Length: 303
Image 1 (cartoon, rainbow, N blue to C red):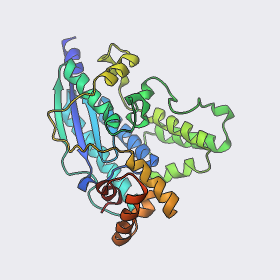
Image 2 (image 1 turned 90 degrees about the vertical axis):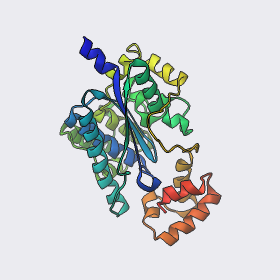
Image 3 (image 1 turned 30 degrees about the vertical axis):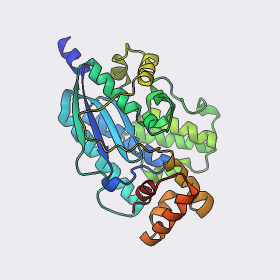
């Protein structure tokens, strides 16, 4: 019993950021690629992840600290593989994540709860949601539902395209293989908006690696109590040197919409593949068309 309590009251918080302050995620597909890679890697490493918060330009992880080396190896392997996939999309090479990441051991129930709040509330700090469970990419809502952001999925009455997509997800997840951009584009092609949302939820649930049982053990084994605690306590982090800017990440949602509306650029990666001079021109236009700051546009356009 003593050993089990020691594990439950100890966690490691890891903060990782993008190289040069650039963005790590541009599309829903990016988030799904990262999530499936992280899922596969966590299972291979046999570690318990209490929370992960992939933000546009940085990442937070909270893991049980019973094997700190395994946690570090998980972060290294996950980010290395995601960097390879992102570079393929960008048609580039080189470092995607900053060469070093910050880490801090949290001991005691209060410290663990505080850092979990800090992790899950990151999207709220960036004005992406009001409560942690409202934002899909904290994955918190999946502790309570298999379809928190879509209508219930009925496989037997789904369209032929949807049934084929589900089979691909089942095949990859059963084999414990991550899904890359190419396969995801293929399985989403031709789906309705309703089906797209259902498939996103289905992929997340099929791969989900977050140890909700361990997470909720810090909140009386209650999802509602955990959500209330996160809403009541924004959390804090004194042990890591995180680059923090009080800017809204809503701008990163506005930019791709402006690219489509004013520049007929449907895929953000098409903008990123433009020559530097063209991207610089885009930056000037987007400053007038969005609420993004010059620094946010520089990060988005990788200038």
